[in-house]
Length: 118
Image (tube, rainbow, N blue to C red; front, side, top):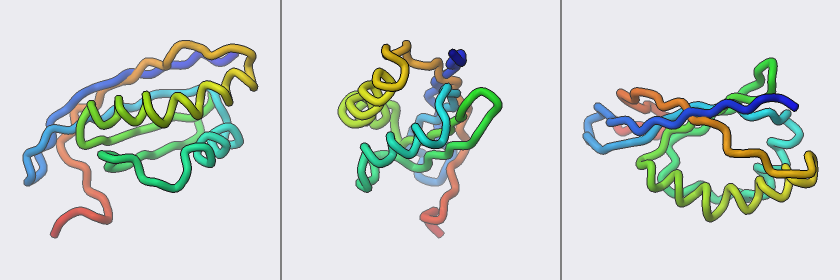
């Protein structure tokens, strides 16, 4: 079994809005096929408060970077949408649900996306 590593950080955005945000990265021991099952299970509705989510391959699985408007937005999404989808998929594949990976907090300065205000 691949070791999962994840660290979470709350950060303050220095963007012009001055609003607080949460940005973190974490590694998960799954492949693109499992990720696709999870995304399908989550459906097309954009999570409230999500600014950007990136996922890419590593030697041990996938690595995510998430930027949220607030830590509360992420926690609500994880509890109400993510875990109800992820846990059954992981239990089916592995026979158990491992502990949450550790989130590494990022010291967010700005999150500039295609929707960034001009």
